[in-house]
Length: 397
Image 1: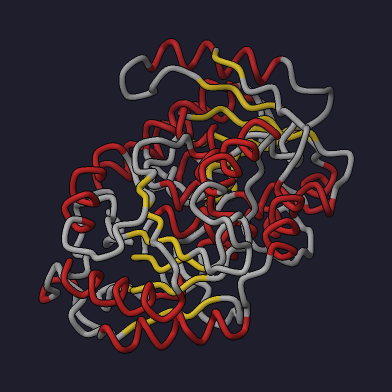
Image 2: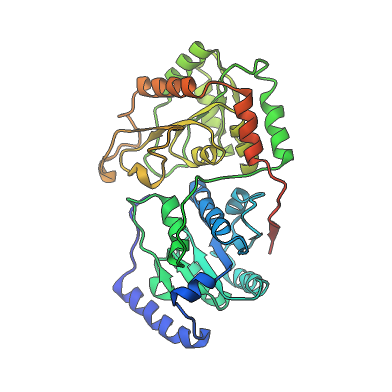
């Protein structure tokens, strides 16, 4: 994560003044542990920009439902965040609202209505990491009476603001919201779900390529979302793909967004085995289904890798040295190999991760395929773990 912005003393003074004026209007709220532990209604504001940020919030929803089976969870979200919650059985309701940076009044009306529709009883309005924008704090103020908890730069407007620690994983940090309400919980891995339509899409897309179920299905994520120094050289990806395709007779599979499709096609041009590209051809739930039917992913540290992790796909991650990997990546998980050559100060980092070699990536992928050999049984298990009929009432406000 880039350095976390801080508000100026003048802005913080304004937020303190605003909070002092607003609290009497909101009414008395008890922050005693007994009261906090009694909360069963949760309303989350999720307008994350990074895909990985939305994925890393999913363990919190599972933790709430595990600790409090009678809890009700509503989420107001951007279209992207809502796509991550598709068929999530731990979310009762997900509402896609207008963009709060384009239609703040419209979002206020929508959130107030959703708050009024919560079941009877005290409520907690929360923001996970990636949603700590001050405009969302103002949105929380107008939403209705609730204990405000989570991550927010305008901390005076929150009852239980949490400190952002880049040396702590995003998953653990998000689950700290529930811990702040007095519940001892253990964080799980992120999870995403899809329906039969998405499962059939994945089977139809991959089956013609792999007639032999024992042939490895290696999927490559060669592009990141842009903006930060997190790339690996094209020729290095080509060398890895050539070596693995030759060793395992595995035609490469490429995934990515529509904006990345042209660069992926240019990378494929110099490959002997060009494989197939699904870049720009999948929704986020379809992408999750496709990844569940592969055997290993070779990826940059980007949103698509987090989707792969959320469907339990083993993977090799080429991680940038300027970012501490503990924040985003599964460093100690046996299903993954995180290749990190850091630490490197971000201000001196090159946009290419040259400290990670072709040999490292190839060896790590071969190691994972030995531990997790191609298996129709494993693919079916991943599909069944993510296949769910639940639809958390994803609607537009």
